[in-house]
Length: 157
Length: 279
Image (tube, rainbow over all chains, first blue to last red):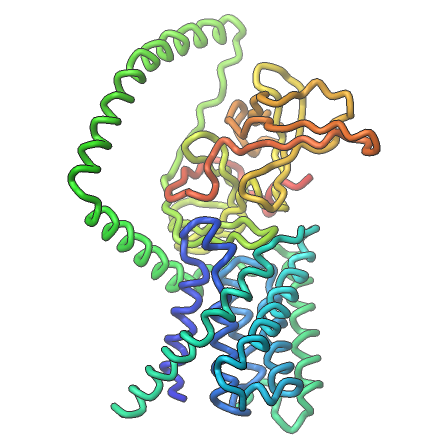
């Protein structure tokens, strides 16, 4: 996959993550960066390096202003689970992937949430469930859009 | 894609464990040295800058799409509002003069707020627990860690990280936030803590027989020297006296609509400190 295109995609995903659009958007929007990591890992096979995943997560922590390391650890563990535990997900259709994507995004969210305990007690909130659900529901559209862009770029290059 | 730090000859589980360990070390260090990642604001500025552009353009499009009729209706509504506000303004002026005379008698003029700067919100993070915003002013504009941040209505939060061109603000609803307060018109010292929820704050450690009640206004007490005294924090909305609990549960509705901030006011002339107020 074109590295520059991926850098731009991650840049835009982080912009979407921190868009000042009020608390409702902040609570329910899917984790676009995590979805992009999943997409990249599924489409590129074993190409995705844990170092890159970790660095992207660390950058996201800085962008969000969260306790550093939360997104980084969650990203690495999520990709590890996808590659080693749920390897078959790659071979499923986009619609069949929905459940696994929800599970992975939920696990990712839980790890980020528990990482915040470094700075004090964090209460449970429904958005911990809503955000992964939104991510899973958007997954077919998300993959379709990225597949389209990818094929379009490959054809033009 | 080449592995940058850990070559792929190591087993995946070992690489993952190494990254988890590294993250724990970084999280621990950042808790010990809160200013450690101040520089990261410069690194992430392009993302926050793009956030601002997207939001501003979205608002412009929204305004453009608003039809003439709704603008006229809004205009008429504003005129009506102005009619009711004008007498109040006059009344305020009279009260202000009276207040000055009374304060002069007491020889206790409040400190002027000092230099202020208007900052625009360029990014938000409203995840459970974290209630953070990023603004477009940084150390180049005189912003420092610990400075109080106000918005229309009262206190909004305080600066926790500063980069050259941006600063991060923990809202008063952030779990880490704790402000010395008092009941308006009294000297009863209180604390107002964030609960990680944009709509509610809490007043901890009040006995079950507390005299605080719904509708009471809370203002900053000025203790600790971080916030000037008399700034509106919020209104008590609920006091629960639970028989089993040693303290009353007091919920406060913030005076500022924390979820709708677009511009904020930073009080610049304040002593620089390394950490925001913590209970």
